[in-house]
Image 1 (cartoon, helix red, strand yellow):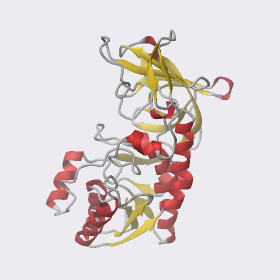
Image 2 (cartoon, rainbow, N blue to C red; image 1 turned 120 degrees about the vertical axis):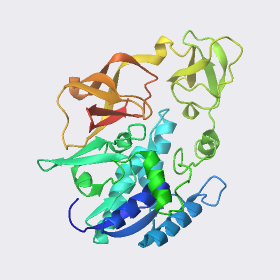
Image 3 (cartoon, rainbow, N blue to C red; image 1 turned 45 degrees about the vertical axis):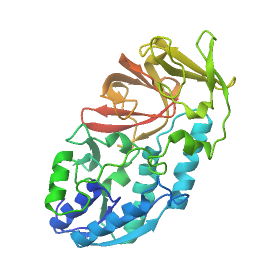
Image 4 (cartoon, one colour; image 1 turned 60 degrees about the vertical axis):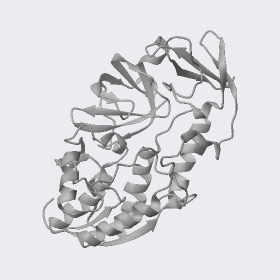
Length: 353
């Protein structure tokens, strides 16, 4: 990035966005910090760290020497992200709200706000890189592959990518913490947040029950043998092992499917049961980073965040997008995102059906 720019940094109160702001300020840019408040239903509960995070972001802004404002996107978040999250769970699928939050809030509502402030671009603490070739903006994996977050950014389009930068893409996480400590940033040793932003560290099922009432039903084997009772199909995800309450029968049990019309949860014994292994998935609601679908052919893909890329072929029979994997993939889950790569380039992806 050449020349002095006006850059608005999304500051979360964590070490990554803190160092992002510091680095850009060191490079001589005009930097403004924005803390996004995306949730306010119960931000005074023991599980919600919004107030603490906002104070951390303010103290970092003070040390870096930049102005910071708190912007409330709670309505946009509820309308665009949380309502989708509840609809998908109610339908028995397992959505990824972080993907939607990036596409709809951080790189849409926040980006629009930054442009109103006169920014040249926005910056976030995501671990991803960008390259511009022949006028096209390519989303690339981070240098630190163990922290790479391009999976969560796959729904960004050319307009969004052209006005976004990712200063941490070339830096390893250990180096980020070291630089933050050297700069005297109070978030240098702060633990990374985990889980979905509006749930925080609270038990997931307890949170979901406030919005989706229990609908108990039978837990059955593929052959129809009743193994117990489930609390509601929406509280379980494919591949889930914990919380089934089936014990003392040899190998562990896993969720392998949902019979939604009959409200039955299908459970199988053994990690490598055939029902948990599939060579193929179909995608819907596709989004491509280069503003057009890639040609049919050989690529690699992830069908969940914490997994290595798996070789696959992409085809488009009957206007559907199908990924066929060379090796069987474990617990492919409807509602999650399948993300396509060509080497380091994130091409986009879609929602697994």
